[in-house]
Length: 296
Image (tube, rainbow, N blue to C red):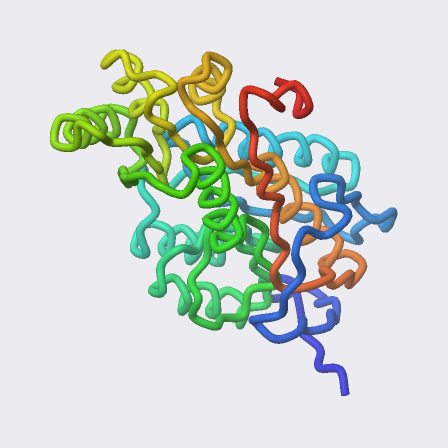
């Protein structure tokens, strides 16, 4: 028996939409990743989709662009897409309040980062109000009523990074984690090099890996210390091109902005349920040797 969910604002006619599958449904890399198309159906009223994101480092530039590009496309379908940055960091209070504000402002759907467990009540409250929610980039492992998640599979990314490190070092090396800041990564890398003269590798798990790369380059150890990191931001790719960073693992940032918007629109206007609850983006490993294959 298919349960139905009423979607719309109080006082309007609500369209009945199917409830999605269980929270933990899995699908790795859907075939239409980054290429999801809006359905041909025209909404019977003006629709508004809220996307709650961040702009605290270069990682988010293509994510935002994916949102804005789809927003322009949906203008012709009587749908407005708003990109809102509620603060500099993803915390439950900041993003939770932004979700609540979206409910009060009667958005038809909401897409949000959801990396903390505390965000779950806010998501569930929005869905209970008839507003479907999609998460992107990061989400809590705590079950909630989101429609779908679009983003990287952290386990697969870590696996890809580990394989790249093994390939570069023959099975030996060191690792370091920063806090999304290039200047902090620079200092951390210096500290590790000073305390470990035989350091062979640095694994940067967060943003700002170009800081660690700059420290290695300044120490005259480019190539001697292998750096593995994440994402294709311009600063990082420059160090890959120079051979200072051995390899970087991508996660299709553009699709993380693009796909949730379109999947929410299609769900709202035509009841199209995403192919799974977890829509993982690719984990491509780009090195100096293959970067041309990826358009760099």
